[in-house]
Length: 269
Image (tube, rainbow, N blue to C red; front, side):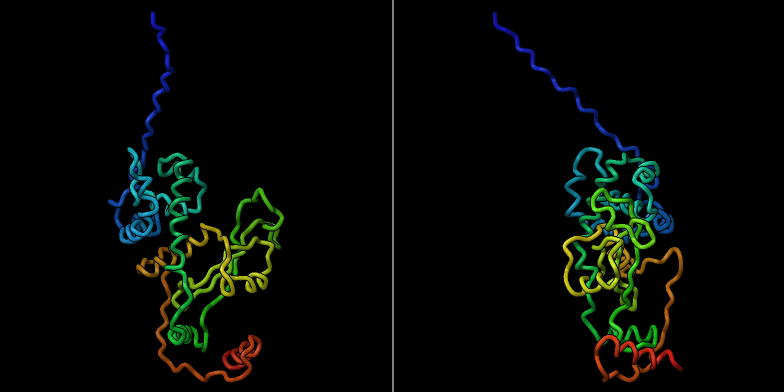
């Protein structure tokens, strides 16, 4: 009598169902979309088309989210600054799912950094824009640094403690007269001094790593300007001044000399 082999049958994998909230849809008005995601319908679709090739392969499973929905999940996370758990509760997705979606979209955006964050090519136009805005000649960019607070990292924790005693990433950014980011360096822990950042920043060399969220937000900021997305917090101040570009400075071209010339010409009157 032949022996009957009993092959264990793996348990049927429980099918996942997303219980999405009603607002994860493009059927809302542009005003409602901007209140939730900081972008209107055109902006969400622009970003969706931008990242589609990178993340669409993950939307072919049953009950998977569409690319616009994945973009909206990420925009909700970035717009609110909330923990993943809060996004899970408000949208209706598991925290692990939200984490994967956000990571995929951020990676795709950061890979397109050079398309949206780039040094101005037309130097004369850039100088003219700054002069009409501020009355200062020969300006190619406005540079400043800021600390973005983070949770204490598990590795090299002391390096991320800034002078105020909190954990942060020291970010250096350059903008043009229209508010577009033309350079951003989010590669340094909070204990780094601003002068050290400038010496080793992207202006002088390309860093090997960057904080994805900060870089992605800079890219999205530039996309907002590109698409004329309204600022929901305050209106942009537009100054129309077509005056003369003023006298050129022919003195010592080191930073100190140019700074002193600008100070004496425009601020000692």
